[in-house]
Length: 441
Image (cartoon, rainbow, N blue to C red; front, side, top):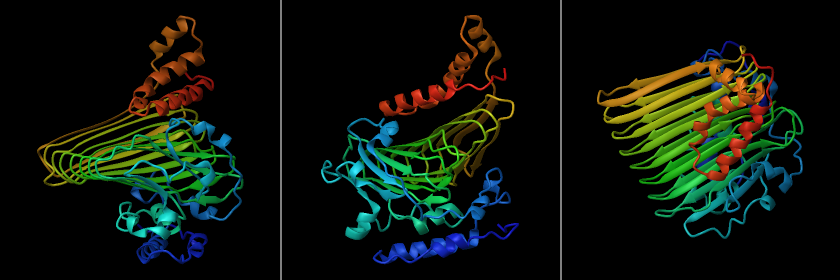
């Protein structure tokens, strides 16, 4: 798509450099990615998928991977210590692995491997070839191209055939946010073998209040009959930019769930894609976003039913206050021959102020008659009668508003199967709703 104005991409193109010691297949991918980015540039409003969330302003800001990092301690991680004491934890600060704050990765159960990408690229790159950078394509996705070109390190999770990973894997991405203009490119690769089971949590937080950019990519593969649960929690500071890509490829009878929770960042964009690549698969893409002030949050989802007899479910709920803006664009794509597809998609939004806005666009593209596909979107405000009922019984306006809003959002949280994680975000949600601006009802 032609751009309306010339963008200054030189800060990113000039920063690209060949890395010595990397396998040739990755070097080739990096070169292709930066070349593709030079052609794409940052998306503008003329790009249909970015009509409501243009990223062209990032070109003018010239974010850099170079900068000062703050010191980090165990106390800084207390706010994300919800995955239980048995979680295998990896901590990264501005993209760099923090071994002292991470779990001992050398004593994991048989069949469970957790490592850093940087270490594997040196010691055992064959494990990554054929997987890393292969599922999140960058042909039409500029931010994915940048991540592929620049990521320095990341997380690798692999569970062998017939192995159940009892402990969740918790990846904590921390941005120091001590000075403006910093960017990091987190990368994660999750591989679940045949009949394997694994649960992964990714947390994104910041220490300071400066404006910065986080640009993560997560690739997930679920082989036949595998079961993968992935939870992402984004609670970065109110000045941050967050552009994320998540791709899952699943084979016969695999069952996957991706839950995205977005509370933070000034601008958050989440591109989430699932491909049902063989019969009998089931994929759920769910999320909850709670924003206020001048925040902007965008979820773009694609569920590709490439094979017959597969099910998919999507439920995204949004709570918007102040002058915030939300975008939801969800597409269900049913290919020719993918008969007996059963797909459901819902986007439900609650506007708490007269100035909050939501753009919602559920889509179906079906090339088969023997399917059952539904989609829907709702936008509303708090029920006046329910509010009056609570006020008439002596409950304060702020508390009544919080209770009704929580009731709206609660069933989205029920999708979280990891109980400590669910309880943590129930508390976070109640705290966020308790800070009640002047009610508009």
